[in-house]
Image 1: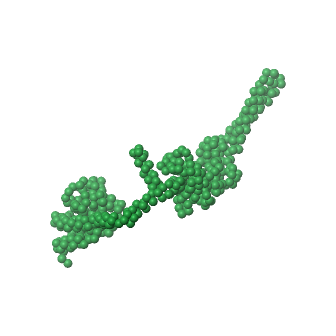
Image 2: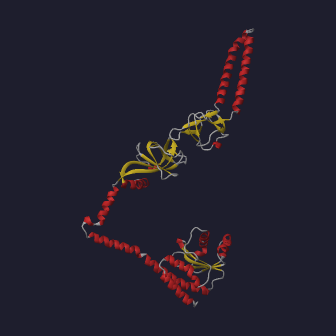
Image 3: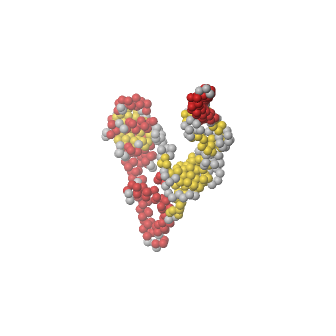
Length: 446
């Protein structure tokens, strides 16, 4: 086979003219150029479009470390200069120079292209590119660029040709009677769709929650010592749930008991002295009052000690996050510790965003699509919609919805999903334009 550069250029030009697409032409540039002169790496860069083709691969895989490195290389000052650029690792910043040897051989060449702003062909190999090599490449690139522009012009008019064809069809249709014109029927269908009655529906995040849970609060002030139940455990009425640390209370009870006994001994002594001395009779009432005060304190502390064991007031499932977060934690009187809910006593709670507030009367249909079971929706009926927006746990404001289940569900409390609430009837046109109109009015004040 004759390796004459002229014959190779002729053959490459013929292949370029026979290319059927721009992708095929880009692949040809990165891979067939090797017949003209040897190289190890080739990259076709089309400016804002990025890497269009690579040597040795049929399809470019974006977001790879190699392409990220190529983008960093083309972001250097040399890439903004015109003309052919001979490149080495020294053209990179000092901290990036070691990465050159990881991806490319010692020498590279950047050749400008006029097919896109900032377009370049990058070639890399071990030996330097001579002036003769650059001359052969520029001759080949002129042919290739001509083929690229010709192929791009062939692909662009396709849309224009279709538009002209459509205009001719409309002109022919205009010569027919009005009731036979497709445009008239199209407008009639569109008007019919605009006034088509549909349900006003909104979407909101929702979850399954207990309808009437029993809230278990701290009966005394103290430190929780241990839990006897686990989250989602089923308990019976009277079963022990948790207990407080009794050490402090027991010491206070002992002190109160000793104080009471001291007051009683003082009363007996005063009573004995009052038999012989009348002045002690006046002190008997004060000492008796002190005994009553000490006894009340002692009885109160004993009752507090008896309340350190907290039991369930009814049967149900324990709703608790993590018991370990409560163990050793001081709690105040009345602070919520856990909840107990019956498995069948479930309803839907949803949070309606502020932008989706529509007329939702009581009894509106609500369908909850759970993330864990999207094919088994939960159907419910709206029973409550808050009049004011409340602060959600995620620090956003929304309107709280509550809905009663229409039928029992096998799903458990706590499962989340998306709730679709259907309100009053409206037209399809208003349903489609409601949010755009609201945005225009709030933005422009119309």
